[in-house]
Amino acid sequence: MRVLTWNVRRATSQSLVWEMLLDIAPDIALLQEVGGFTKKIQDQYEICFQTAIGKTGRPQKFGTAVLVKGNIVEDIKLVSEYSWVNDEISFFSGNLVGCIVSTKNDAPKNVISVYSPAWPVDKKRLFGIDVSPVKLDNNPDVWCTEILWSALTKTMPLTTNEWIIGGDFNSSETFDYMWKNGPSGNKEVLDRMESLGLTECLKSHNGQLTPTFKNPSNGKIIHQLDHLFVTDGLNTALERCFTKDKSTVFDESLSDHLPIIGIFKTTL
Image (cartoon, rainbow, N blue to C red):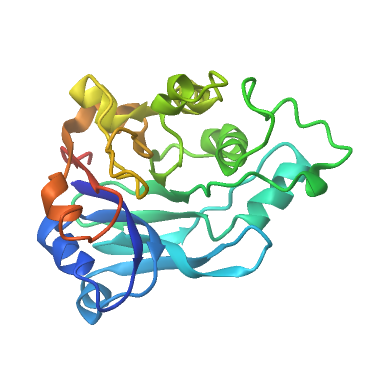
Protein backbone atom coordinates (compact mmCIF):
# COMPACT_ATOMS: atom_id res chain seq x y z
CA MET A 1 0.00 0.00 0.00
CA ARG A 2 1.29 3.41 -0.99
CA VAL A 3 0.22 6.50 1.00
CA LEU A 4 0.94 10.10 0.06
CA THR A 5 0.39 13.39 1.87
CA TRP A 6 0.96 16.67 0.03
CA ASN A 7 0.05 20.34 0.22
CA VAL A 8 -0.42 21.00 -3.50
CA ARG A 9 -0.46 24.82 -3.21
CA ARG A 10 -3.91 25.51 -4.60
CA ALA A 11 -3.49 23.23 -7.59
CA THR A 12 -6.25 23.65 -10.16
CA SER A 13 -7.48 21.16 -12.73
CA GLN A 14 -4.78 22.50 -15.08
CA SER A 15 -1.87 21.93 -12.68
CA LEU A 16 0.98 19.54 -13.45
CA VAL A 17 0.69 18.38 -9.83
CA TRP A 18 -1.84 15.80 -10.97
CA GLU A 19 0.51 14.21 -13.48
CA MET A 20 3.10 13.75 -10.74
CA LEU A 21 0.49 12.30 -8.40
CA LEU A 22 -0.63 9.81 -11.05
CA ASP A 23 3.01 8.87 -11.61
CA ILE A 24 3.49 8.25 -7.87
CA ALA A 25 0.23 6.26 -7.94
CA PRO A 26 -0.71 6.31 -4.24
CA ASP A 27 -3.47 4.03 -3.03
CA ILE A 28 -4.40 6.72 -0.50
CA ALA A 29 -3.64 10.43 -0.89
CA LEU A 30 -4.10 13.10 1.77
CA LEU A 31 -4.11 16.49 0.06
CA GLN A 32 -4.24 20.09 1.22
CA GLU A 33 -4.86 23.36 -0.65
CA VAL A 34 -6.68 21.66 -3.51
CA GLY A 35 -8.24 24.06 -6.01
CA GLY A 36 -9.59 21.50 -8.47
CA PHE A 37 -9.11 17.98 -9.85
CA THR A 38 -8.46 16.67 -13.33
CA LYS A 39 -10.85 14.16 -14.89
CA LYS A 40 -8.11 11.49 -14.73
CA ILE A 41 -7.92 11.91 -10.97
CA GLN A 42 -11.68 11.76 -10.64
CA ASP A 43 -11.80 8.61 -12.80
CA GLN A 44 -9.13 6.77 -10.79
CA TYR A 45 -9.99 7.81 -7.23
CA GLU A 46 -12.94 8.12 -4.92
CA ILE A 47 -12.69 11.57 -3.37
CA CYS A 48 -13.74 13.07 -0.06
CA PHE A 49 -13.33 16.85 -0.33
CA GLN A 50 -14.30 19.80 1.83
CA THR A 51 -13.63 23.49 1.38
CA ALA A 52 -11.15 24.87 3.92
CA ILE A 53 -12.10 27.77 6.17
CA GLY A 54 -10.40 31.14 6.44
CA LYS A 55 -9.53 33.06 9.59
CA THR A 56 -12.79 35.03 9.51
CA GLY A 57 -14.87 31.89 8.98
CA ARG A 58 -15.39 32.43 5.28
CA PRO A 59 -14.71 29.59 2.81
CA GLN A 60 -11.33 29.53 1.10
CA LYS A 61 -10.86 29.05 -2.64
CA PHE A 62 -9.31 25.65 -1.95
CA GLY A 63 -9.97 22.65 0.21
CA THR A 64 -8.73 19.50 1.91
CA ALA A 65 -9.15 16.02 0.47
CA VAL A 66 -8.76 12.28 0.87
CA LEU A 67 -8.34 10.24 -2.32
CA VAL A 68 -8.52 6.45 -2.38
CA LYS A 69 -8.20 3.73 -4.99
CA GLY A 70 -11.09 1.81 -3.54
CA ASN A 71 -14.06 2.92 -1.49
CA ILE A 72 -14.83 5.69 0.94
CA VAL A 73 -16.90 3.76 3.46
CA GLU A 74 -18.11 6.64 5.63
CA ASP A 75 -17.05 9.93 7.15
CA ILE A 76 -15.27 10.02 10.51
CA LYS A 77 -17.00 12.14 13.12
CA LEU A 78 -14.34 13.67 15.35
CA VAL A 79 -15.51 14.37 18.89
CA SER A 80 -13.88 15.81 22.02
CA GLU A 81 -14.78 15.66 25.69
CA TYR A 82 -14.90 19.47 25.66
CA SER A 83 -17.90 21.22 24.13
CA TRP A 84 -15.84 24.24 23.05
CA VAL A 85 -13.46 21.94 21.16
CA ASN A 86 -16.45 20.35 19.41
CA ASP A 87 -17.46 23.85 18.29
CA GLU A 88 -13.96 24.34 16.86
CA ILE A 89 -14.07 20.91 15.18
CA SER A 90 -17.17 22.17 13.38
CA PHE A 91 -15.41 25.44 12.51
CA PHE A 92 -12.39 23.56 11.11
CA SER A 93 -14.43 20.81 9.40
CA GLY A 94 -12.95 21.71 6.01
CA ASN A 95 -9.43 21.60 7.45
CA LEU A 96 -9.74 18.22 9.20
CA VAL A 97 -11.23 15.86 6.64
CA GLY A 98 -11.60 12.30 7.86
CA CYS A 99 -13.13 9.11 6.49
CA ILE A 100 -12.89 5.34 6.67
CA VAL A 101 -11.43 3.99 3.44
CA SER A 102 -11.16 0.52 1.99
CA THR A 103 -8.61 -0.41 -0.66
CA LYS A 104 -8.50 -3.59 -2.71
CA ASN A 105 -5.72 -5.40 -0.86
CA ASP A 106 -5.81 -3.88 2.63
CA ALA A 107 -8.07 -3.76 5.67
CA PRO A 108 -10.18 -0.61 6.21
CA LYS A 109 -8.28 2.38 7.57
CA ASN A 110 -9.31 5.53 9.43
CA VAL A 111 -7.78 8.42 7.49
CA ILE A 112 -7.57 12.14 8.26
CA SER A 113 -6.15 14.81 5.96
CA VAL A 114 -4.96 17.77 8.02
CA TYR A 115 -4.56 21.39 6.97
CA SER A 116 -3.63 23.37 10.08
CA PRO A 117 -3.54 27.05 9.10
CA ALA A 118 -0.81 29.45 10.17
CA TRP A 119 -3.21 31.37 12.41
CA PRO A 120 -4.62 30.38 15.82
CA VAL A 121 -8.17 29.99 17.08
CA ASP A 122 -9.77 33.42 17.53
CA LYS A 123 -9.45 34.32 21.21
CA LYS A 124 -12.88 35.98 21.06
CA ARG A 125 -14.43 32.54 20.66
CA LEU A 126 -12.47 31.28 23.67
CA PHE A 127 -13.27 34.17 26.03
CA GLY A 128 -14.14 32.91 29.49
CA ILE A 129 -13.26 29.27 28.67
CA ASP A 130 -10.62 27.27 30.52
CA VAL A 131 -8.53 25.99 27.60
CA SER A 132 -5.63 24.78 29.77
CA PRO A 133 -6.37 21.03 29.31
CA VAL A 134 -5.94 21.47 25.54
CA LYS A 135 -3.57 24.41 25.07
CA LEU A 136 0.14 23.77 24.58
CA ASP A 137 2.41 24.51 27.54
CA ASN A 138 4.79 26.58 25.44
CA ASN A 139 2.37 28.62 23.35
CA PRO A 140 -0.14 31.28 24.41
CA ASP A 141 -2.64 30.40 21.66
CA VAL A 142 -4.76 27.43 20.69
CA TRP A 143 -4.19 26.13 17.17
CA CYS A 144 -5.94 23.68 14.89
CA THR A 145 -3.33 21.08 15.88
CA GLU A 146 -4.60 21.15 19.48
CA ILE A 147 -8.21 20.81 18.28
CA LEU A 148 -7.14 17.73 16.33
CA TRP A 149 -5.25 16.26 19.29
CA SER A 150 -8.16 16.72 21.67
CA ALA A 151 -10.52 15.11 19.16
CA LEU A 152 -8.22 12.16 18.55
CA THR A 153 -7.85 11.57 22.28
CA LYS A 154 -11.60 10.90 22.45
CA THR A 155 -12.20 9.41 18.98
CA MET A 156 -9.32 6.97 18.46
CA PRO A 157 -10.31 4.54 21.24
CA LEU A 158 -13.76 4.14 19.66
CA THR A 159 -12.43 1.99 16.78
CA THR A 160 -10.05 -0.90 16.17
CA ASN A 161 -9.07 0.24 12.67
CA GLU A 162 -5.52 1.42 12.01
CA TRP A 163 -5.16 5.19 11.62
CA ILE A 164 -3.40 7.29 8.98
CA ILE A 165 -3.19 11.00 9.81
CA GLY A 166 -1.19 13.29 7.58
CA GLY A 167 -0.95 16.71 6.12
CA ASP A 168 0.36 20.23 6.50
CA PHE A 169 0.57 20.79 10.27
CA ASN A 170 2.40 24.12 9.86
CA SER A 171 4.54 22.86 12.73
CA SER A 172 8.24 22.03 12.62
CA GLU A 173 10.68 21.25 15.43
CA THR A 174 13.07 23.74 13.83
CA PHE A 175 10.79 26.62 14.83
CA ASP A 176 11.41 25.92 18.52
CA TYR A 177 15.12 26.63 18.44
CA MET A 178 15.21 29.17 15.59
CA TRP A 179 12.72 31.67 16.99
CA LYS A 180 14.26 34.24 19.31
CA ASN A 181 11.69 33.73 22.08
CA GLY A 182 12.56 30.06 22.50
CA PRO A 183 10.35 26.95 22.29
CA SER A 184 6.88 27.71 20.96
CA GLY A 185 5.27 24.30 21.26
CA ASN A 186 6.11 22.76 17.90
CA LYS A 187 7.93 19.76 19.35
CA GLU A 188 5.08 19.50 21.84
CA VAL A 189 2.60 19.14 18.96
CA LEU A 190 4.54 16.15 17.63
CA ASP A 191 5.06 14.63 21.08
CA ARG A 192 1.33 14.80 21.74
CA MET A 193 0.59 12.88 18.56
CA GLU A 194 3.11 10.23 19.56
CA SER A 195 1.49 9.99 23.00
CA LEU A 196 -1.64 8.77 21.22
CA GLY A 197 0.27 5.80 19.84
CA LEU A 198 1.07 7.44 16.51
CA THR A 199 4.48 7.36 14.84
CA GLU A 200 5.68 10.11 12.49
CA CYS A 201 6.86 8.01 9.55
CA LEU A 202 9.26 10.34 7.75
CA LYS A 203 11.48 11.20 10.70
CA SER A 204 11.31 7.78 12.39
CA HIS A 205 12.15 5.87 9.21
CA ASN A 206 15.04 8.14 8.20
CA GLY A 207 16.34 8.85 11.69
CA GLN A 208 16.34 12.61 11.27
CA LEU A 209 14.14 15.55 10.37
CA THR A 210 13.57 15.82 6.62
CA PRO A 211 12.65 19.32 5.38
CA THR A 212 9.47 19.46 3.30
CA PHE A 213 8.91 23.19 2.80
CA LYS A 214 10.59 25.90 0.73
CA ASN A 215 10.39 29.29 2.41
CA PRO A 216 8.98 31.73 -0.17
CA SER A 217 10.79 34.74 1.30
CA ASN A 218 14.36 33.40 1.27
CA GLY A 219 14.21 30.06 -0.55
CA LYS A 220 15.59 28.10 2.41
CA ILE A 221 14.53 24.47 2.81
CA ILE A 222 14.97 23.68 6.51
CA HIS A 223 11.50 23.08 8.01
CA GLN A 224 9.40 19.92 8.09
CA LEU A 225 5.87 21.30 8.17
CA ASP A 226 4.32 18.15 6.73
CA HIS A 227 3.89 14.91 8.65
CA LEU A 228 2.57 11.40 8.15
CA PHE A 229 1.44 9.64 11.34
CA VAL A 230 0.30 6.02 11.62
CA THR A 231 -0.68 3.64 14.42
CA ASP A 232 1.48 0.69 15.48
CA GLY A 233 0.23 -1.93 13.03
CA LEU A 234 1.02 0.28 10.06
CA ASN A 235 4.29 1.46 11.54
CA THR A 236 5.39 -2.18 11.77
CA ALA A 237 4.38 -2.63 8.14
CA LEU A 238 6.28 0.47 6.95
CA GLU A 239 8.92 -0.43 4.37
CA ARG A 240 9.97 3.04 3.18
CA CYS A 241 9.12 6.68 3.75
CA PHE A 242 10.57 9.46 1.63
CA THR A 243 9.88 12.71 -0.20
CA LYS A 244 10.06 13.46 -3.88
CA ASP A 245 13.28 15.12 -4.96
CA LYS A 246 13.36 18.89 -4.39
CA SER A 247 14.27 19.61 -8.00
CA THR A 248 11.22 17.84 -9.39
CA VAL A 249 8.82 19.81 -7.19
CA PHE A 250 10.39 23.15 -6.27
CA ASP A 251 12.31 23.82 -9.47
CA GLU A 252 9.17 23.19 -11.50
CA SER A 253 7.11 25.37 -9.12
CA LEU A 254 4.56 22.59 -8.56
CA SER A 255 4.25 23.43 -4.85
CA ASP A 256 6.19 24.94 -1.97
CA HIS A 257 5.75 21.61 -0.12
CA LEU A 258 7.25 18.23 -0.96
CA PRO A 259 4.98 15.19 -1.01
CA ILE A 260 5.67 12.54 1.63
CA ILE A 261 5.29 8.96 0.44
CA GLY A 262 5.00 5.93 2.71
CA ILE A 263 5.09 2.38 1.41
CA PHE A 264 3.53 -0.29 3.60
CA LYS A 265 3.19 -4.05 3.44
CA THR A 266 -0.34 -5.36 2.98
CA THR A 267 -2.10 -5.39 6.35
CA LEU A 268 -4.86 -7.95 5.72
